[in-house]
Length: 66
Image (cartoon, rainbow, N blue to C red; front, side, top):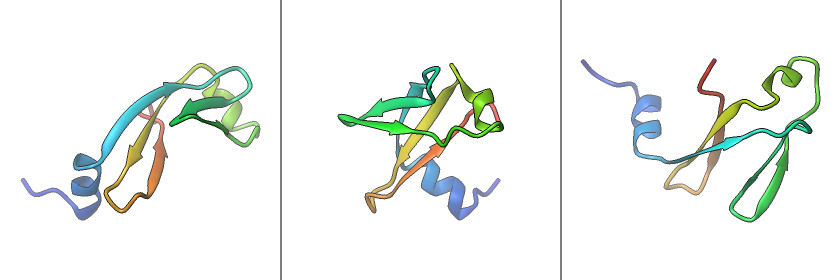
């Protein structure tokens, strides 16, 4: 089985999990982030999200349940 480039990037990234608050915020690396409060995003309240940091210092947010 062969992984795609994106899958390999994800595998080699630094990953941490955070729980979204009722106000759709989470803290990571001493910074508080706010997720845009849309109707669709309101379903993410109290959900865990995964933060991926890549060697290029780029970051990405993923919802593991989606």
